[in-house]
Each structure stands twice: as C-alpha cells, then as structure tokens.
Length: 111
Image 1 (cartoon, helix red, strand yellow):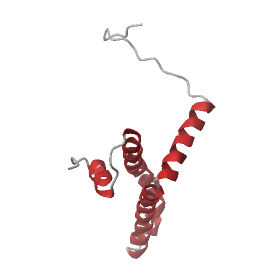
Image 2 (cartoon, helix red, strand yellow):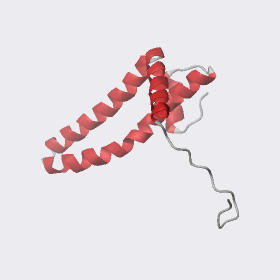
Image 3 (spheres, rainbow, N blue to C red):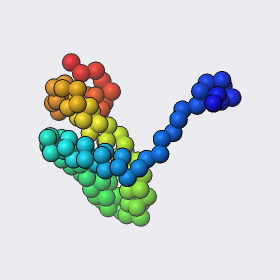
Image 4 (cartoon, rainbow, N blue to C red):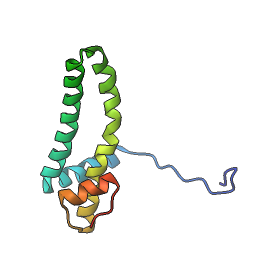
C-alpha cells in the first residue's frame, strides 16, 4: 500500500516472546565471550551516576539529584552503542579492542 508520498509503507512485524528470548540469548553469548567490555560500559555508566550524586551533594543542591538521575537515563542508548559495536565486530570477525570500540562510539574513524 502506498502512502501519501507515493512510497511503499514499511511492514511492521509483531514482536513475540521468542524474539525477546532470542535477543537476550545473543546478548548473553556476547557477554560470556567478551565480559570485560560489558563490565567496562556498565562501570562507566555507574560511575557517571555516582558522580552526578556526589556533585549535587557537594554543591548543596541535593534536590536536583532525582531529576538529573531521570535525565541521566537518556544517556543509556549512547552507552549501548558501544555494546552494539562489540557485538557487530564479534559477528563480522573484526578485531576488537578498547580503542576501536571507544573511537567508533565517539564517531571518529578507527585506524
């Protein structure tokens, strides 16, 4: 069926419990194969949250901790790009290193 623009609308698939289980299984296999990368990104995200709380406490504006923590969750998808890059490199057989992962997340070309 064509839309107003004349292009064909994409077909939206329904997500089943099997799709979710498959995605979680693949993520677990990636983590089991290269656990340090997942732990590094988890640590980075955790330290960022702790720094927010400590800074707000030091500046005496503790009442802003909750709103900033809620906004900090928006950074999650950007942190997840590192995990996606590890998974992509593992799937394609490309070499995996911290430098390659972090430069791809930063948007700079890997050498």
